[in-house]
Image (tube, rainbow, N blue to C red; front, side, top):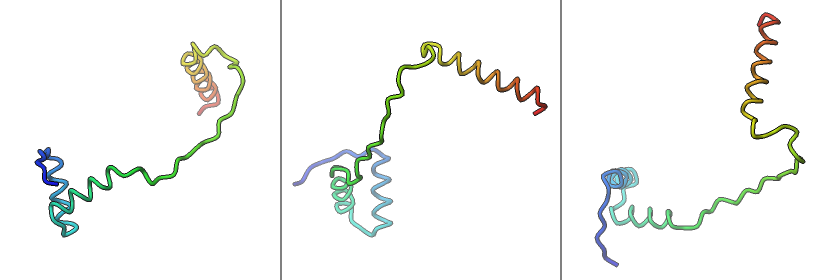
Length: 83
């Protein structure tokens, strides 16, 4: 099929670079890029385990404040030890 496509300057530069590196024609590079780009991903789907940790022990609405308080306590502890 013949068609007209308007390329962005970035796309044109990438195509010209691939043509020079691979020694391929414009048509070959564009067709290869389209084919590879539209094929379903060959990467396996990764599933990570999840665990129920139960209800939170602290009010998560104030989690950032709690993290800051714990960090402040640790800094004071280190300062008292001379670190």
